[in-house]
Image (cartoon, rainbow, N blue to C red):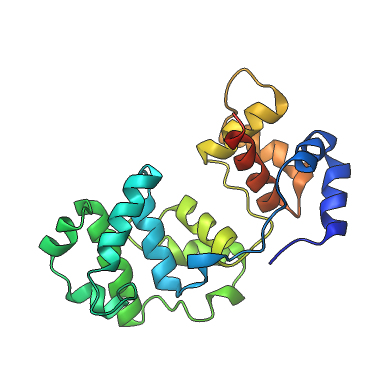
Length: 206
């Protein structure tokens, strides 16, 4: 999903400071893109693998896990459950991440977590569903909402990159707290995801 030019123009008028940044930064893309168009399990598993890792290391481990399946595609939930802990650890996964992948796969295979049709739920319901999985917290669920489901009004206030982006945008002495960021973000409704994306891009310019 992508905001219209009219919606972007309205956002810029509501917050001229952010509007000036939007004018000089790349255009907001239409999510999902690339690998994020894959199955829900694949996207969530990839998010788990990437958690708290530098991108190059995460990319390497993700590539190894992908090759653990019997074919060229990322393992399905059932195929993931068939893998031994030794094979998962051998790919570079920590014990916690292997546990999270197994819990996600188990809940899907058992039918406890039904991802088909999850896009019909509102943001809060999606977060509540996904955070029942061991190792998936609010941030991972929010990334799924933005980058997989294309939701336009999500504010990941605990994200350090978004906090740093607001520090740059507003010329603050330090990163704002999550609560401060949430308050500042009210003016960005109903395009808080869009604002967050531009805050991330601001950090790329420093």
